[in-house]
Length: 232
Image 1 (cartoon, rainbow, N blue to C red):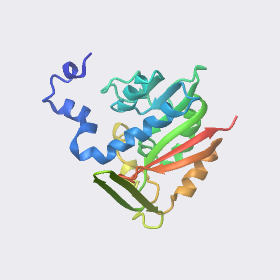
Image 2: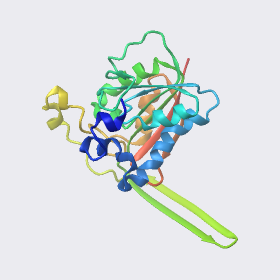
Image 3: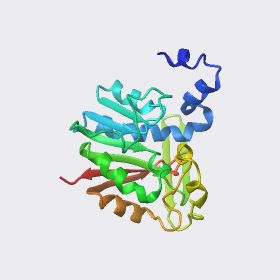
Image 4: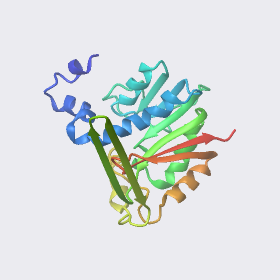
């Protein structure tokens, strides 16, 4: 069904939430959508993608435009995923994908559950695992663009620091929530005390993966992207 029809018009709060990635206040976060889609589109050995936690599925729409098979899984049917399921409940039936991804999703689970989630997602991957997680360390971004007749210059500098990540997240109130509300908040964030980027990468690699690259959205460093390759 057309989203406008499903949400009963563009004036409704449901439609506005669905279209939130295009609101002016999310201009800096929009670069994260590009970072989500780029490996799937640009890597020559990626022809099929499985995403867990697709949300509004903007990435799915973009990647499919380039002829790549893209299958999305989400716990909610609100935004038309291809399959409604949690990560661990999605059945492995032998179907493999060149790249498996999950963006801003893992942090909605207790950190002790992350290894099981990573291992289950990796079971569907032929080669790559691509994830993004929240980063709460200190950051500094300098962006300058100069355009004159016969001269144009653009430069972006971004620096992040693991040592100033604020306080740990208090998970005690989260544990007291009813099951249907436990996944609404962040249980952890990289860069906070006790979870540096190095530790997080090491924990993921222990699930049978090799770290290839890490990138922050330079305009919104809170989004940390990591690409791993599966060890066969």
